[in-house]
Length: 305
Image (cartoon, rainbow, N blue to C red; front, side, top):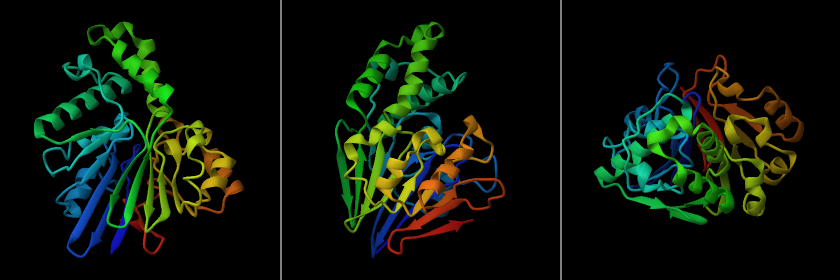
């Protein structure tokens, strides 16, 4: 049996693919899909490119940790081009948004919302099942378990209330509400804990904040690989988190252009002060790799061009 996690260089954004092969049996799980514009450099690898190059004939499950466009923008390129067993998400849209024709890309949050509406509607048209997660949830396939860790319920309810109150026909007068929604998306993102052969292998953290981990301290102990929260944001890492997870490897999903001033220079300094983990960036100045691959059997990391 082989099992790898591939972190794609999608520029500023996140996309990870887990592939398991056991004889004739295969399983492919995708966590987020990067942005819509990750073709800027030849060394980058969009989800659609990856699917073609590795001849993936089915995505068994697609997990959307939240609907910021740098996490969901690449979904459109695969919808209708490769079968998807199911899409898993935890933030449904109210009817007035889902049934709207919103297509406004003038700001990042409006672009994110427009993309999310389009993805959900297209999934319905294609007959792709959409599973809404409302509590701690696990998928088990072959020797792997994928634990979807839920955010704080009060914050999630606040996000839902803001979305319910959003008036599509009067967006220009609701900038404060849109800003609150934008910020809440990170606070209410999902995290994914991957266990392989009953051992904690990787923790995919999306954009979650430090207070996210309080209920999960016992679950996230001694995980081999940690995906850095929020693209290497120094405010999202702490000595306590590093001590609990005790990672051997940290992967930072980032670009080499300093988008949103991320990753913070002090992130790597802090990590090296409190951890012996090896740090890898999906993209940094001078890098040539397109994929960071973790082999879960060997517990090794490879840079793939």
